[in-house]
Length: 426
Ligand SMILES: NC(=O)c1ccc[n+]([C@@H]2O[C@H](COP(=O)([O-])OP(=O)(O)OC[C@H]3O[C@@H](n4cnc5c(N)ncnc54)[C@H](O)[C@@H]3O)[C@@H](O)[C@H]2O)c1
Image 1 (spheres, rainbow, N blue to C red):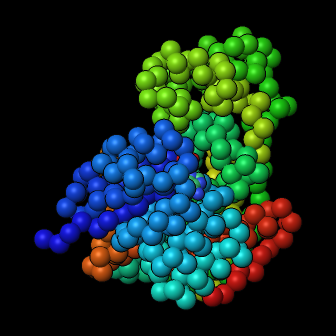
Image 2 (image 1 turned 45 degrees about the vertical axis):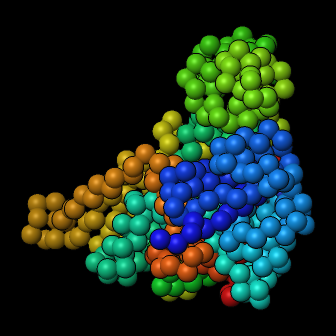
């Protein structure tokens, strides 16, 4: 058995730790040998969890690179706005990288990183975790098998529930594109746009149109009796579905995000401390109609491929139920599925049947892991990729991710300028 692959985690927030956990599951395959993170608490907590020596805990990517520690690859889990600069330096240092999505903030940065990685011969894999969710992998296999014929139409939906949407895209850092750097079509739906280009990779996207906006989470909808903070000056909190105390404390939903703002070891797990912070500076204690958010809560993207196939993707932010759906229509049949349910149906026309079609139900075991089982499978595939082992049908390097990202960037331009965008060709 060979040595485990040695990895440095750059950015020890939520995502950095999610991927690093593979080292705990498979210590024979992956070992975290360095961390770089400006936040002292996160740096040391991650260092402790993964047994990283104190002299290998750095306060930034720059100080890690300056020392020249040898690692096999890095996980770049910094925030969207930091991706381009950090990725550029990592590629320039000749280090292979797993980078969080979105890869960067605009087309020019995307092309530049792609160019650099090709020039340097670096492996740059992108965290398109949904490509690893068994639900999408099985659908992809069915399309590849040819059983539904040639795909000419597809509809995908991302229903982001009211609790998820308000937490991440209203109260948190992804809610304001000036802070985060990304529009929601990139920070949330670049997975879906990637899945579309993956399912339809027998052709190339040619045109993009889009409409959308922010409808619900705006000042004008501030309810009578509400206040600036749920736990401080709100008279209607008890009956509000966005009440911070109920959401993050009583029901514990998304409370790891709310707890990111408690920065000492001792108090971090305390409920009282969380309550206190929700009343003070913690952004998760704010009324959702007073959050200075500006990203869309609904948007439709339409894509036409070179071969005439048309696709639409819908972001629906604030739904009761979280759900991703996909409907792929081919010349011989169709596939319809719901990711969270872990079920899809393969239907084919059949005149001899009462309902005039056959239907096969495919139940995919999602395994309880994040992103329909995708998170840990992605980490495992990355380690194989870096070690020169066999890659899977899901392996996504920067080149594979370009069209999905370009659709997202073009969709924003199409929406704001009210025009149809012609896609760039590689
Ligand atoms: N693949 C997915 O499904 C998925 C899900 C959620 C988030 N994300 C993406 O993952 C990324 C990270 O998200 P997060 O929630 O973990 O963010 P986070 O803010 O919790 O973590 C980012 C960390 O990077 C650190 N950092 C900033 N500059 C640095 C530098 N120069 N060197 C080292 N560390 C630096 C920050 O201090 C912070 O702790 C984002 O791009 C986000 O959009 C992806």
